[in-house]
Amino acid sequence: KNEVEQSPQNLTAQEGEFITINCSYSVGISALHWLQQHPGGGIVSLFMLSSGKKKHGRLIATINIQEKHSSLHITASHPRDSAVYICAVGNSGGSNYKLTFGKGTLLTVNP
Amino acid sequence: DVKVTQSSRYLVKRTGEKVFLECVQDMDHENMFWYRQDPGLGLRLIYFSYDVKMKEKGDIPEGYSVSREKKERFSLILESASTNQTSMYLCASRDFPRQPQHFGDGTRLSIL
Image 1 (cartoon, rainbow over the protein chains, first blue to last red):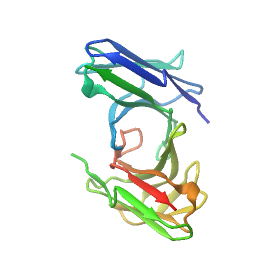
Image 2: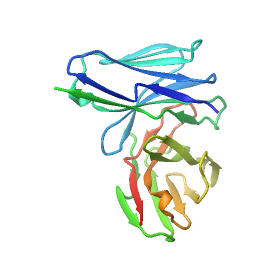
Image 3: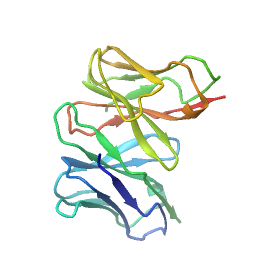
Image 4: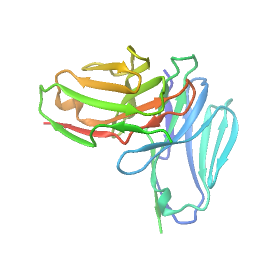
């Protein structure tokens, strides 16, 4: 079973700062997902990637398959970015494709 | 946009009750999932269904069962609720394997 570790567990930043959240995993994967959960519960998928880098607005996700490591970056952070960010890795195999989740990183961005 | 709807946001039940949590998705997705989320433990898979009437156990199925009689609806059943099943329950669906999952807003269940 894959072990997924996120760091840091908690992160407090000032508005405008550049933020990095890290994710490492123990076993080779098919894909890695970054998710965002706002207070109240709803979870939104931000990225799914299996190599290289993806960008969406101020969010950038990178993955290094050899090192089994991914990072989520937020540029010019804003208080509305405050949320829990969750890394999840997908195993291989067709309809049996399932996710193993990290424990999440709680990000607070102060104005 | 995909909509995954969970029947209740908050639910309070008593120990020993049979509890039903309902989830409906409107995008004809094949796969549906039930997770529970606890502080310090993250999301853990209870059951998933890859087609109507098909189900597979996840990592923590004990004390739970599921039902998928129609493609759009996936029900989680707590056969005899216990206090250690107090948790946030999240339903999700996806179109194909390796596609992003779409989550409902969650049901915060308290068992007294």
